[in-house]
Image (cartoon, rainbow over all chains, first blue to last red):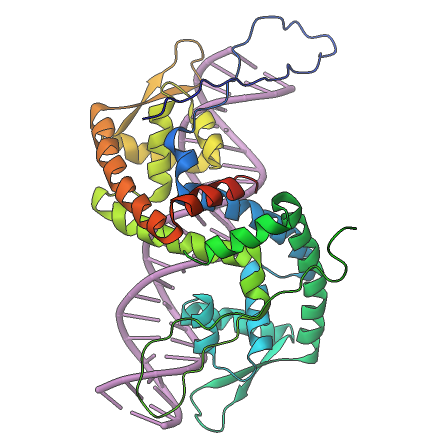
Length: 168
Length: 168
DNA sequence: TATTGTTATACTCTATAACTATA
DNA sequence: TATAGTTATAGAGTATAACAATA
């Protein structure tokens, strides 16, 4: 087992306060030892995903879209006429949980459920013109977001990351 | 601007996913077009994280540990005597949400809250012997899990992935 | 006054069973 | 009988305000 390096955290002292009697030597906060977590793919993956989603969510808040909603609109746009089951399954969403999302889309006028003439059980999903317009704005926003991610990884790093993640 | 002249979001279309083998000559299943999602770091990251967690959760179910619980035990073990606030913050868990987890750990006899003599507001967290024993088993399990992940990435790929993810 | 642990609460996400209408 | 969409529901996970004890 490789030894763990001692934490060598440089912490800046708090800014001088106006006139407070505080000169007792306080214990240095000292960063925590993350132990084996830093080498666990699952843990590092989770933290990275939260970090990227954090930026994504902030970028898309003005459009009123959550990540899952964006992905659903993209998929309906790329596959018009498909059923709820197909779209939901492709996104890893349970069918019951996709119903409320489609309800919202219809209420906001972004997508519609058309009745299928071949199988009257299914709904053929399509985007409305408003939905396509919003998706257009979304693709501008996603470009800004993705550029920020790419700035952290480098263009080559981003490609490498996508290829590695595709193996999992 | 260097290399990238036009839209940074030039995204390749999705590859077809391995569909279930079907020899029915009825309706062709026709995999969905994932559109730009396959090139979005956030989306691919999320799906990969869910995939890895899926294996992790199955591996740790016999030990009665969820991913967050495992990470908390690891952190307490590597940093005995730290406060709830410190452990929770290092894991990105809100302080109120960490209370129930510590309650469970104490009920199961895995960890204890010792009273601190320097600051009676805080609890000094430590693992019990049972907690350390369970963590020992967990590290065996995590090795199996991690080996399965590494089998998909290759040893070099795994290292590269960890380095890339650390930049996010 | 500020902080730690805590309670209460609410909101999102996710998972499963069961109903209906079609097939 | 099986399937698509739906309803209801329960469980995680997550976020914030507020309170008591302590600093």
